[in-house]
Length: 104
Image (cartoon, rainbow, N blue to C red):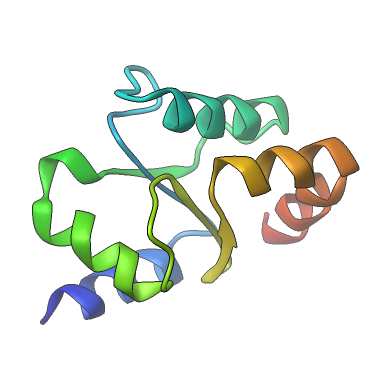
């Protein structure tokens, strides 16, 4: 199984997946902390978090998977949503809450 298959399996096996630096409890960058806080503000406490700092292959592979150069990255129902800035905009407009409600 190559790294793209591993990532595909992760994003399709869990309704909400956040690729981040660190963990939700101990984020290792401000953008990852913001992303985790936004999900919690939406009432999502049981999302699947992948710490890219623990796996360099996933850290590089996820950038190619979504053709998105930065981390964090949010996936809902297997679909790429975006990074911290997009999550913030969607949260402020109420769209993220709708996407998450559909995902659970």
